[in-house]
Length: 470
Image: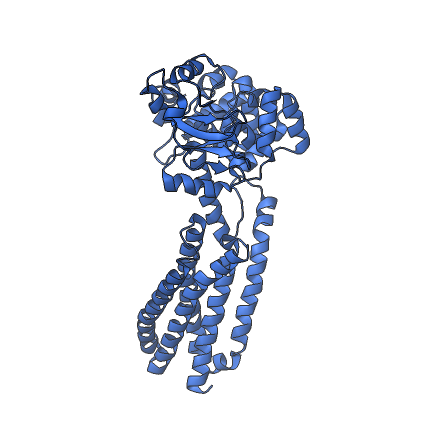
């Protein structure tokens, strides 16, 4: 064991948390080597002393960094000291790989110690049969809460909410509420709000903890409660719920069912995860790779990418057919073959810029029916301005390169047309796809590229054929 490794093990995790990671934010190689050796030697003493104590996010990073065949072995060696919450911090493929090989009895025992939102996160990946077997081993109250959360749509606020919360009736005094919180053993580990409900669990209001501490014991709850800040319907999409948190600077929010009954609470830590997931998903969909993870195997990765590559092949054939219309012109003037990729490439890049801004604005709710017209006009003006500027630059280059000012004029005109078309395609296609219910993040890039390629080729080769009479 090297001196650095000895120092790392001695100081982790209480004294020097940053030492687990190197300067690039990755788990240190020497620590990974120590863990790998401990797994190979079945050294449970080392693992329970230096791995079991890691924070859940650190343990998740460790699971992603070690070799696939070491992951399950590590979980088995840690036994009941393995923190199942770490599985909410890893890729879905890794989580499935580990959970599928764990006995249901071990999963049930571990889930009983988790917050409900973390438990649901793990349970939703399991087969229905395994899920039912695990739930059957849990206490009745906890089983009912988890089943209710799992009944909500995937990616909804109901799936992400925590069903542990503090709720009191309006006629209680502040003193009764404080005594209740001191005596009750089954409270959430941390919370910042107390909710006020009627006998049917209908949400009436909320009180921040600081308000409770500043109010005399004899005051009744109903006199100091406030209207709940933006209660979130359990069926609401998690991305919309995250937007409410961002808009109103919320730390937590009540989650209610269709009858305005309190069923859970959504907290900022869960919303941060949602924001990260949605942003990651949008970026991947823009590239046509769906929900692919780095830990996916070859076959699943091929399946994930094949569809959009096949569609891209189809659109490429359409673009090629446009070139085929002008094969005689290209044969007579070789310069056209040299320059036409430049027009298409510039249009493709300009369209991608506009499309990326549009898709993100749609995802965040910043672009809607009320400001769409103004944004479309702005993008059209930007496309036209860029077209004029780059037509001047490229026209000069082409005229100098081939010694023909007329060729410079032709490519300049095509550049203006294609960059203008690219700007319109980059915003109108995502808006159209969103309007018809398709995901603009998935489908936009292929079709925007097709439009810019076809427009660029047709404009350049068409103008050249007409201008030079070839």
